[in-house]
Image (tube, rainbow, N blue to C red; front, side, top):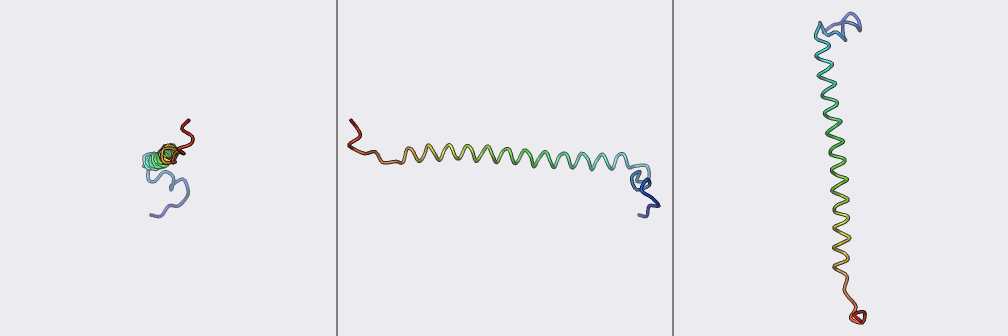
Length: 68
């Protein structure tokens, strides 16, 4: 398409409000998804870290002399 100016580009033949709102909603959804993925990843890594600490404590061999 050829537009004679920026105002025609932004109005998109009268459909600009719908088009630009659709772009805005899409960007918001994508950014929200990226944020949710980052928070989920952080939560999983924290959980795995706690699990690893517990597993390491249980794997340590006990010294027979330290029983008393």
